[in-house]
Amino acid sequence: MAHIIIASHGGLAEGMVDSIGMVAGGAADRIETYSLHPGENPNDFYEAMRERVAHDSEQYIIMCDIKGGSVHNALFRLTEFPNVVVFAGVTLAMALEVVLTVQDRLEPDAAERVLDAARAGVTVSFGGALPTDEAEDEEF
Amino acid sequence: MIKLLRVDHRLLHGQVAVSWKSALDIDCILVANDKVPGDAFRKSAIKMAKPADTKLVIKTIDDSIAAITSGVTDKYKLLVVVESIADAARLCRACGIKQLNLGGTKATPETRSLSKAVNVTEDETALLRELIAEGVDVEIQMVPDDSPVKAERVL
Image (tube, rainbow over all chains, first blue to last red):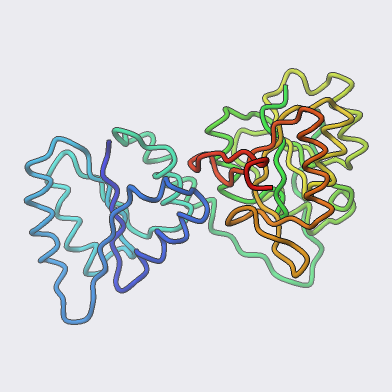
């Protein structure tokens, strides 16, 4: 089974796993977390992960909090290994899509679907207007 | 055919819908509720929670019963979501549904807890006992990943 890791600055990763557990139950139990705390260097986690992924045939799916942040910068370098996939800009929608759909391996086309789900989950609605019901009510 | 009749006080919401959809291979969701069809904001919010490539139908309880008993829903792998145990009982009795999933009901001063997410009043306890006596298999299960618990064991 693929390893799933959420990596963040501070406690977002643990918090996200807590939230995923509320929506997806025990499916959240397989997620590992990495939280960068003040005074720590993400390269230490990178070095530890490098050892792990180099000696494992399973896939590692790593979701980082923000593109270009120090966590992402460090862990992105793990993509030198073919069994590593690194996302940036994790959202609850993205993480749920991964946790609920990926078993042994995430293929590139499925990764695109994960990104689509994450993008589709980012919206804005302004108050003061009636909801624009773009979709007609469906019938059987 | 009805794959699952679920009681959830939050009705259809985000990834709970997605997790049941993938677990049971659902292709159509019926939200059966007497208030939602007339409430543009709630309807809009529920539509936002609809998983991709799934049909979503929103009807009153009576219209839902009419649709299910007419046979037009037979060709779908249907998830029916209701807000309350009372609404679920109406559907069970009118449509001969013999399986009921309790996903979530709100805790109030009048309820006692049957599980982390399921809370029932005395009236609802009595109603569930009646349904079980009528042969309905009532199970408590918030998400597919949780193990189902038979309601009669905790009522």
